[in-house]
Length: 125
Image (cartoon, rainbow, N blue to C red; front, side, top):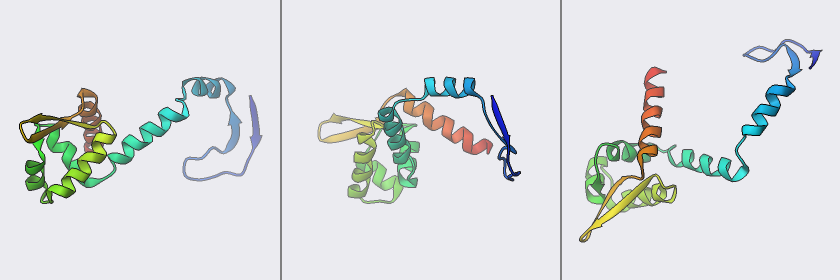
């Protein structure tokens, strides 16, 4: 335990410098490795686009094809396909083929849960 005086800083900063070795050690033990951190950042980056959020929103309720999504979003099929390719790359959506049509859904329940929690967070805020 080490504490030393420091000038008071506003906006939620500590008024003294103090490092709790036990807490730091516990935090470091649970810190994900660099690969996990980067993968998670990429996932959130993919979710950081309003168009992709709109796609996730409608796909959280039902599966849709590119043409359906284009009509709903007011975009071209090409623009929607580009966004879906990015979402597929992050394993946020998947598709199944039925004849010549590809139907998209969220990749798994984890994505639905992540999205639902994000919505709840924004609604409460």
